[in-house]
Image (cartoon, rainbow, N blue to C red):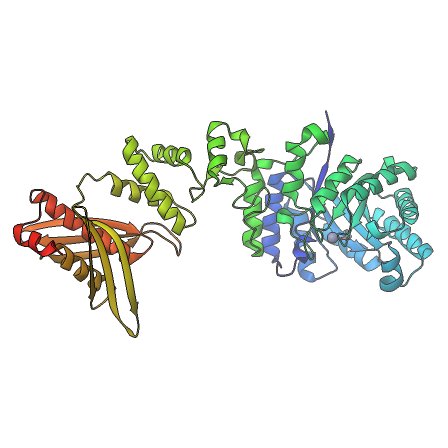
Length: 516
Ligand code: KIV
Ligand code: ZN
């Protein structure tokens, strides 16, 4: 069996330090329960000295959440450690997480203490924490900017004092994977008692390297990774839990380690954290972003349809999401288009499919994503067998609050192109008058309806008209992202139905009218 990497989730502590992501006590408990379902090993519930709310949250989590170890953060001071210990009292399994900065810049400017004082304080703090819990984590803050010699000294001393985990923090996110891996390897080499503690890492994402740094550390022997859901955290955030866990799972061949995380809970946890913190996940975020399992390119869609693994290294189902999505858009090809139509229950003939595909491409040029409802509208329009006595070629609309609505329409008819311009009470009225002038049909519009077939600002609009010529009433339909164009298509469709129903040709007086 491979080594286990302990997953220490700090969404509720470091994650909550993310500007704009403050959580109430109730929300923190709800997230902690979900983290337990996700089967993380450690939940850092908060920093009890920071506020009464933080204290209460840690206490409630310690009381109510079972399974993971519950950790609380403390500076290396008596007050902090006692407060953390008090908040953790109800926990079945608890950990006090003590930290103290060890880098020259932090020691000199922030703490104004020399190395010897820091060393003494760290040992004293771990000793005090050990009186309240057996499980003690010590973090040399800003470890990645700490002199390796001093880091080794501190780590050895805190392990001797009773620390069971030593957490190497890349506090400012400055580390580079190769270098960070060497730092961990250096600890294994130069700290004589290192085997008595778990080496942990805590990487920030200021250079976008938090996941890579954490994984480089794992490769060098770190066996705990601190991370957060959706990569939340101070400034640019922390290493994202979902990336760490899925990288270890997907590349087990390389890392030769495992985690106990229930990966099918990842998506749900990400959604919950995003909803409760109000921090939206970017669409192209690895693993949990909206686009993580969506394919738009025609080449990729074709590959996926032939064998999923051609373009996917993980299954969406592994993280508890629905199957990968083929997004139909302008880059999609015939294969994905016809597969989707089959799924929607349409069996089109070759020529119908070609026509529908052309329509789809035209629509996809205007609209980012073509939804199933769009396809249904396209296919229904394309598969009507009404001969097109008139075909809409062009619509041009001028309208506005200070402008007389004017519409120019061009229709193809019997090998000719006929064009008329008309004004009207509104652009739809102007459009219909222009069409009437071309066709010469003297009908009346008995009903007009417009609905958005799909969602979003670029939704496809469907216009339905009821059109009556003498005793004959027909229904015409047209769709477009432009409602005047949809209106024109619906009206022309109705005109064609009238002509078809009356015996293939316009009546005599109408034929006269359509001659330019
Ligand atoms: O970034 C950091 O150094 C921390 C420590 C408290 C571990 O969050
Ligand atoms: Zn941090």
